[in-house]
Amino acid sequence: MARPAVTPHASAAPAAGASDAAPPLAPSRLQDFALELAALATLAANTIRCWFTRPSSWRREAVTQAWQLVRRALMPTILSLFAFGFGAVAVQGGGLVSELGSPDRMGALFSVASLREFVPFVTGMVVAGVAGTAICADLGARKVRDELDALAVMGVDTVRTLVAPRVLALMVLAPALNIVGLIFATLSGVAAVGAFGGTTAGFLATFQAGFTLPDLAANIVKTTVFGFIIGIVCTHKGMNASGGSEGVGRAVNQAVVLAFIAIFVFNYAFNGTYQAAFPSAQDIR
Image 1 (cartoon, rainbow, N blue to C red):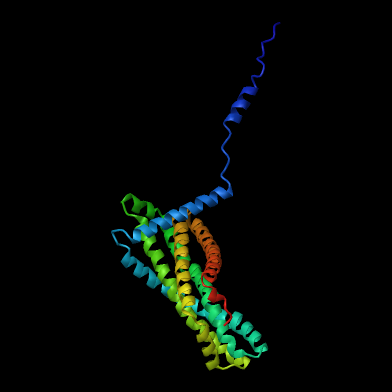
Image 2: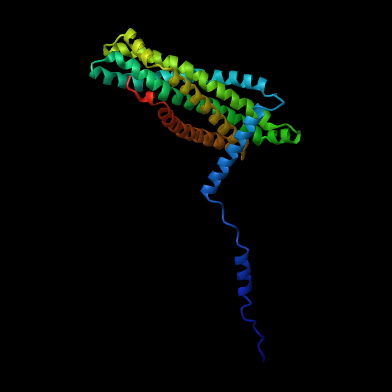
């Protein structure tokens, strides 16, 4: 009885076709990071464009958002800066200058440290952790409820309506809270100087000697950029949230972490650039 003919390599053909139809590789983390930076840069450019083009429908919303954010972030900023100034700077710095025999010089230490370092940085952390998260959660909730898509269908520019006023409010809020923080940070130094044998008059005299106009201008510029960075990061994460309430919470956590990292990097670069542009800022006062 004759056997049926068997075609060689018949079973190998599907395997070859399957290898040709293999799914593409997932993008790497570096590609995701590049896409994230591109999206942030695009949102920042569109936000700045909205400020200088008509219609200017975002102005009233910016005032409303600024007032709401001040109510949320004012007390946390005051408490954080007073505690940090009293504990980390006044106690440790006061101990150092008292060992050197000049506790009244703690005012000069405070003026430099508060203007350049801990007041703008702590203010940025508080604004990102309190105001930025509120904005991200608000926009994220609107995103998962499809409100942003509904506005886009109706022809409403969501960047002009929602992003531009919130970013501007943060840019005004950050330097304003920074000035308030400078006052309370100085009060924390005044409260601590007596414990090391110094006087309030000596503290204020050395503080005034170290308080320069270029330092103050750089402080305000830095915190204004902090507000811009926080606003762009938090609005971007909120408008791209997905996955219901869990996705909104994940977007808020990512926004805070990313804002902290961006502030730290910018603060480091800004301080180096400022001291290189103004060599007198490096003088011992």
